[in-house]
Length: 131
Image 1 (cartoon, helix red, strand yellow):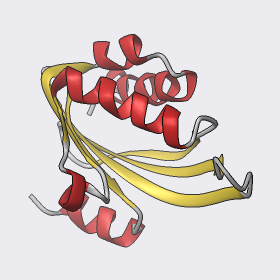
Image 2 (cartoon, one colour):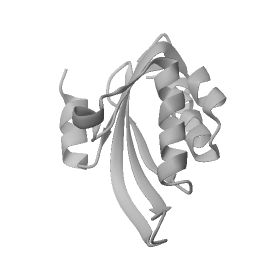
Image 3 (cartoon, helix red, strand yellow):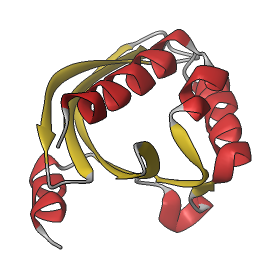
């Protein structure tokens, strides 16, 4: 895995924190797919239009959502495991939220083609090791 691939993921996460959807999608393939823990209920975010919907959903639900990168690891020639710390505050209550999560990124031709978001880091690590 090249350093450039890790930087692609790092830059996409920074764009997420900055709310810069155009920059985020510039790091993605046209058919990108993002699967969140609620995908079983709401479905995955598919394509660049789906990523734009994701940014809107996050902004509407938790406008101060941020992720801090704890670690980026190669999970193969075209995959990156990102261990993250998320923070936000409840939209209505204002109560602070702090949580650990992990994202598994799959890349195609240097761009993000799939993102799987995990709230269970062990599950994310197992998925990263599976092929």
